[in-house]
Length: 360
Image (tube, rainbow, N blue to C red):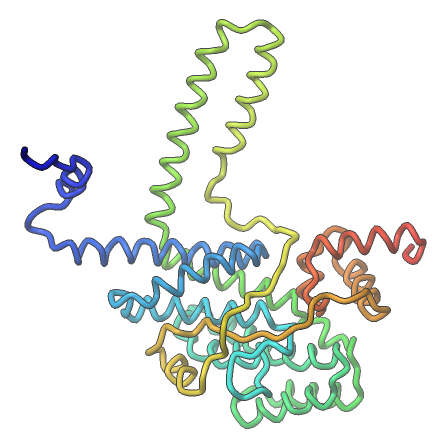
C-alpha cells in the first residue's frame, strides 16, 4: 500500500516557488513581524499599556536576535525600544540597566538617546528631550528625598554629557535648596518628557511606517467584520420586532469593533513595570551604545510586594489627582513611585480616601 500523501504539507509547499529560497522568504516574513512588534511597542508605550508592552517586548527581543535582523535600521529600532523601556522606569530608582548601580533608568536612557540623534530630524526636539532627561533624572531623586543621589546625578552628567551651563547652574541651586517643587522642575516635568517622546515617535513612525503587516491584518479584520454584518442583515428579515431590536444592538457592536483599528494612541489607566531575568553587563552596554548589539532590553528589578498605604503614598496620590485630575491614574503612576501598585489600586485607594473624607 502506498503511503498516504499529506495534503496539508503539499499545499504549503505549493506556496513557495522553486526559484525562491525558503530562507529568503523567512527573512522577509521575519522582517514584517519585527516591524509589526516595533510599531506595537510604540503604540503600547504611548497608550500606557505596560502589561501589553511587556508581552510584546519578549516577542520583539526574540525576533531581534534573528540572524536576518542585523541591518542598521533594525538595530536603530531596537535602540529606540531600549530607550522607551528606560523612560518607562524613570521613576523607579531601584531598577538597574547597567552594572553600575549609580546609573539610574533616566541616566541610562540619556546614553541611548545620544546615539539616536541621527533619527531626530528636528534638532530642537532632540535638545529638548535631552534636557528633560537631565532635569527629570535630578527631579526624581529630589521627589524621593534623595538629595545626595540628585547631587551624584549632576556630577555624572558633568563627567559624561555636555549640557547648557545655565541648566547645570539652575539644577545645582535647586538641589542645594532641596526645592522639590521648583517652577523650573515643574516646567520640565515627567509628563512633558512623555509627551515630547510621543511627538518624536509620531514623526519617526511617519518616516518609517513599519506597518505593512499591520495594514494587511487591518484589512482582514475589516473584511471579516463586513461579512459578519451581511449575515446579520440577512437574518433580520425573519425576526420579530423584539428580535430586530436585539439584532440592531449586535450590529452596532460589530461596527464599533471594526472602526479605527489603526487608532493607536488612546490613553489607558494601567501600568506595570517590565521585569527581565538579569541586568545588562558592561560589555553588552558598550556594544549597545555602538549600535552593534540588539540585546538592549534586558533589565533586573528588585522590589518588595506592595505593602500598606503610607501617608507618603497618600500624599503622592493626592498631589497626582490635583495635578492631573481624577481618573488619570496612568499619568499619576508615571509621576510618582507607588511601589508596584497599579492604576486600579490607585482608583480603589482614592475611593477609600473620599469615603473617609480625607480629600476634598
